[in-house]
Image (cartoon, rainbow, N blue to C red):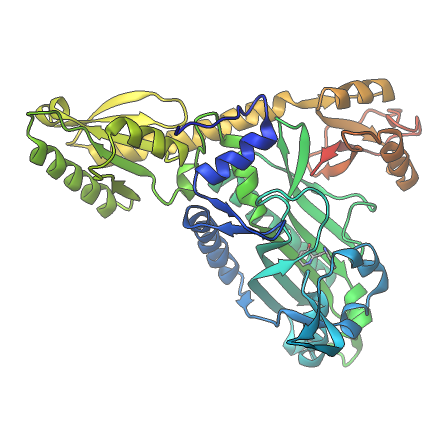
Length: 485
Ligand SMILES: O=C1CCCN[C@@H]1CCCn1cnc2ccccc2c1=O
């Protein structure tokens, strides 16, 4: 039948795979770890892209496009940033029947593709700042369990790559971009995130420091990195000789950033808001925000009902609301209700004989199934109010659930207990890397080890003498820990 065969609370993994397919977001592909993005998910990507692209254009960041292919000499230029990742690099070794002289890598990220040209283009301080972004796909041949949107061998992202004369400029941009990522999650996807800094162990090894927005999936009790904004320092400038002559004629290396968010955002949204009836789309990213369904009654004025539906769609569209009508005559209203609920359309409008007679429509919310009769007189402002309220209540519900998963701990025993309860753990930490390594080893198990998620910028008070939860040494900061994707 139409319904899902798995329940979110009982079989989360199967529920997720089924809901992205039944919601017509994803089609499974015959190569493992690769998925077809159908229009229902591509439209979500496009809406977020439109926002982010407009925002970075305000920051004078320009779009470009670099080749998909990377020569091995250049890719392996940076040993330590690539060493951990080497197994994930996909290589082209043949064309037709013949082997390539030298294998060519498919970009897993574009630092090594772009930075030899940054070196060529940046000569003097007038060439700075250089601020580029590209919207593209990247390939990482991962082996851990592939999951649509969350972990795939090819995904879409934007990657920003910027170069500045001073560290101060780089530091500022890192945070400006991170704020845009927070807005993507909280203002578009209605998902609460924590802004913070990654530990030395978890940061991008090729950079100076990494900031991120961290989300949490209550059903699996795992944190998930939502997006990252790295300050690369002068590490890549040194490697690729990206230097410039400043005003005083002195030679200096540039300060660089790189930052990305990807189609993983869509998977997080499905996991957080979806329910046993299917997808639940936050209105801001729904390609159809309102679906109008005619409810004809045997001898009632069917044409009048259809006309009212058409007029309702036109009125809403003229007001900038993304509305459509489902006039298909081979499906019943009840079938249509289930279908559009599965696809997560935020608001349904039903128009039957009674509604027609009373010059009203019956509005039904997807998030809480609340029904409301609305006069067609002030339809637009009522629908706008309801859509805004749906966004707010989705965010509030997700935040309440995420906050309920947060556990503050002071000792190792409390930490272990919270981890067994699948919590997102806030603990005082001595900030020593070998202690972090020790936490990973001591929590290794079939559920996966705990790792540090981020050190939140918003630090709670740390009383003098507070001990590190894992080492007993003097704590230096509060850090979030947990299992993660
Ligand atoms: O996050 C970002 C933001 C966008 C630009 N790249 C940085 C860092 C990417 C880190 N990374 C991640 N997976 C990889 C996989 C294979 C080879 C290299 C890499 C690699 O460098």
